[in-house]
Amino acid sequence: MAFRDLPDFETFAKAYRSGASRSSVSGTEAYGWVIGTVAAGVGMIVIWGMTGYLGVGFVVVASCTVIIAALLERSRRVKIARAYLRKAVEIHGPALKRNLTPAIKRDDYGGIIKDGRDKALVDFVKSIGVPEGLLNDAECWQIVNDCLDVQDPAVARRDINLAMIPANGHDFEVWVTDILRRQGWTAKTTPAGADQGTDIIASKSGHSMGLQCKLYSSPVGNKAVQETIVGMKYHGLYACAVISNAGFTQSARNLAASADVTVLSVEDLADPDAKLIKSHIPVGRPAPQPNPLLNELASRPPSPFRAVR
Image (cartoon, rainbow, N blue to C red; front, top):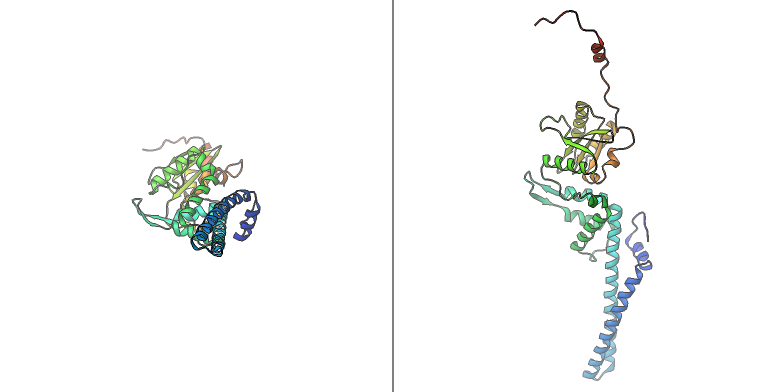
């Protein structure tokens, strides 16, 4: 049962029932029917013995049969809902991460002042069409956490915990630098107060670039993109990028695209090469060329006149 795009719940349920998982569901059904039938039979005999009316026993058996069938059907739909949610996370995992990450609002000291992750998850579950009442919040969180870990093996393999984003800007820069180093990059932070729009200078396989890190509670705007362009030129780098935990405004994305600036989310750190190294030539613009006027001045013979002190 393979879907490239997520179907509606009932279409998925039909495929699930007719798929390979059917045997396990059928085994559960058989077990439930045996237990239910035995219980109903015992109840019928007991009631018959107490009342002397066989018809009452049949009524009990019929009632038990209806109840068992309803319980087994609900059990099947709960299993289907779990499988459907896993499939949805598999397809929409990156987008879900981007929505869950900025849902936490922190103060300047790292304390959580607002946690909107539950609402973000509820909105996701509703948007994909899981019927209400089948899964509670705890089940949804467990499925989502498990699926995101399985779906993103690169994160686990490189020991990157995207959920543990630092609470202040400087620690965020150090955290990003450490992740890049684990990915094989040579990376270092720039001195505080003298970065000129570049927080990290990183290089790998001849690709050198400047990164500006933005730990925000709302999407990053144009200013960060403009600053990182200035920082790239100041440090003489090939390319530049902005990384944010809270996404970017559409205006900032448009400006970055027109200026050849790469924008990254923290989720992109699982495989930074995919965006930071786009080809076998240096990323972005060519390296800054020497000023022709300075070359001409440097090639002139020294003046016969000594400078007057």
